[in-house]
Amino acid sequence: MARIEIPEGDLPEIARVWALVPELGGAVGALSQAVYERSMLPARVKEAVRMRIALINDCPV
Image 1 (cartoon, rainbow, N blue to C red):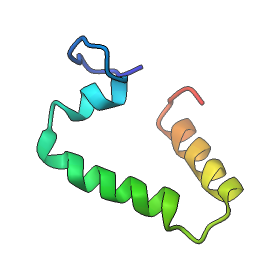
Image 2 (image 1 turned 45 degrees about the horizontal axis):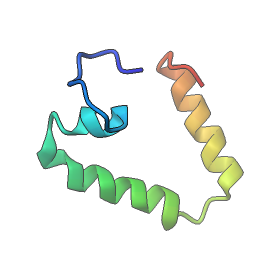
Image 3 (image 1 turned 90 degrees about the vertical axis):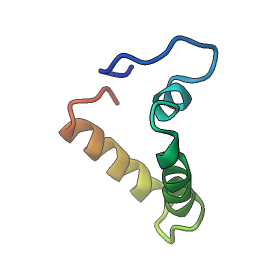
């Protein structure tokens, strides 16, 4: 759940958040692709990193 006001709609929350700044969409997509599709790290390590970042940012895991 976002901590900012986002537009209502049927799209997933993350899509509505990035719609607020569409010029960043390509960069975010490329980063996501690099992390999840081209990374040499094992999936367990990536998930542990994701969880640690969430904890640091006080986000629900």
